[in-house]
Image 1 (spheres, rainbow, N blue to C red):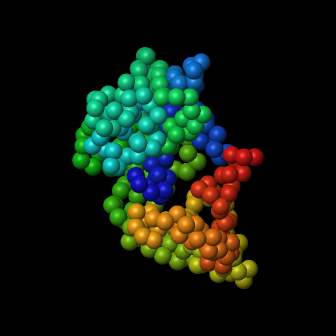
Image 2: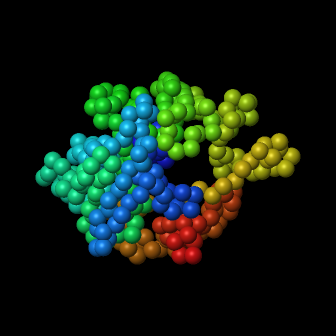
Image 3: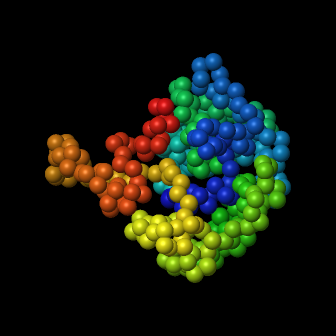
Length: 295
């Protein structure tokens, strides 16, 4: 996956050792606990005894090792962002560059325990493991090749029931999910051409949930519009920005880039162009995220 929409779907189908809660705090997932060495470099994870794939097969430490090895396969490096999320693990740079066949910093201790050694003490390492790059896949499914992701046998709260590519994806509740079962029996996602004009589809009763684009926000918020009573506003952990190609003139000049930064009226963009649906940011972190990290 390479976008947030796909990432949302991946999280319904797969799980990792750890996850982030609503406050962005690391919580156990497939791992029920972990211990950290005195030098803060080696993490020893103990898997939940009831951790299993959707078909009921137990998930073992070897499955974790295989998944991380697969995610750092140089042939997949173009598609999986292991450089960003797994490079802290000892041996990953060598694996990604083709200098090693395995990750030296990963050791399977027994069926339920695995240790991961990183290149230095880093408080954010566990948070990075919560990214889908580190999620556990079923080796039997992955090594089938072809379109194995049509029936991946994951470990998330849902499994794939039907997938009409570019039109419809139907998920059903994973009855073998090791945590609290999903509240919904299933979910239908319209994709591709079938998902054009989602707000109109919502108004027609064809779908139950959709986002509201900024250009339609004023209409939806109008108290005379019945949709106003159905609108739910929640913060989103995302950031939009204007990027400049620093290898080409005039943007190779820092002063030019600074001038653009000073001229850009962030507040006006947020209030007028985006209909007050966004908050002006002054850095690479969304304002709400900055509040969490500094507050």
